[in-house]
Image 1 (cartoon, rainbow, N blue to C red):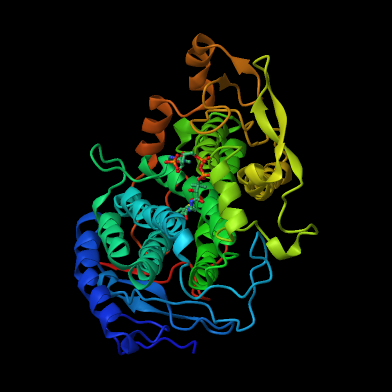
Image 2 (image 1 turned 120 degrees about the vertical axis):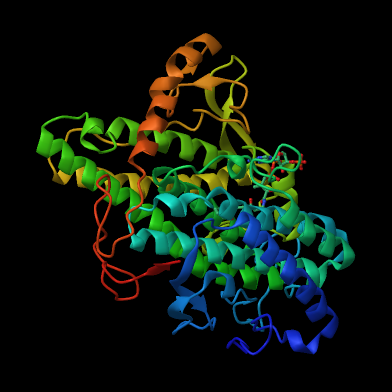
Length: 472
Ligand code: BYC
């Protein structure tokens, strides 16, 4: 069954009505979720928003578009269709049928992975809650809210698994997902990047480009999981996720485009006084968001990830397209490391413990595509400047390079050199204040703030000047 049952209090395609206990448990979590949404979700009051709502998981027509009051959004539970002959693709259980229940021996690891994944979803909504007050256009405002409601749905996706498969512990973890908060002193979110601020729209576009992209890769590995309900839920989440990255990619496109226009118009690189964001500031924001997102991949060498793989809990990106034995017990790989003489270099490790590096490599290749795209905009305008990804050792708080400092070129630095240089590589208070000063809301249909170019197209075939959001 793929079509969602919308007559249920909780829309779903998992026959929730057949399991009254589970249904009651989720229905009692629902008001807590709404309380969290009211207190930690978007702060800008709106009448309704032109949103996409998932209605089906099939290839064709999976979503419905229409104006809805955000609080009445139908957050639901959608798993991709079950493949009846699906088998484990990797690890020690390779070729065995996938699991419809959680094996006792892997219960705590699986729960931990689901909790970490679940924790990021509401965290991002919290980080973005004030952005509505400064949206550059109604089109952008609508995209922000689309991302927010879908992150809310992704929380539902993980909470469903916790309630359905992890008993009382799972229900307690589901409560905790609403109690931890981004940036909180007492109960912060689990992963570093999700406790950082998203105070302006440039940060939002960088976040949706770099941090949502970590989400894409992590979900891609969980989609390979031998635990079939997790696999199926991640498969469907990935479908929604691509719009979030589109928002980031095209958002940065449009900032670069506008900056270039101002550079040409005023014959200067310093577009700040002309209401634009200089390329140097863009590069600093890029450096920050990329390095913080690299931290989300964990350490270059990790026994956790080797165990997850061997047990069948978490696979590799495109596992089935890899040409090897899918167990990796005899393989080795080179991973980034600080060498014995203190230099930034590489070291050889068992392939299994190097799997965070494997995933990160895929991610970095994908990130580079965006940079190439933005550089094409510069190139076509005849600009010699280029944006680039900083070195993996730059500004790291997790993994091999957490204990050292390095330039964006990957040259090691003393602490004093780092302190003296960091204002050239990461956004300073002056940069942030300038970017924030540009963040004035533009809520008239068809109009756009002066620091960003309009999009080439609207949403779902609608024009840019469509009434995407009705403010209250
Ligand atoms: N911050 O063995 P290691 C998304 C901890 S984003 C703080 O290298 P492992 C989204 C680690 O837990 C995708 N702590 O780690 C995007 C471990 O702690 P314990 C989210 C960190 O397990 C935008 C210790 O350090 N999903 O969906 O190999 C908007 C040693 O680390 C951090 C997932 O991440 C950090 N950055 O890998 C909305 C998938 N990194 O065990 C949504 C699920 C590591 O010593 N999670 N630590 O107490 C995982 O697969 C893994 O847990 C990790 C870490 C990849 C995160």
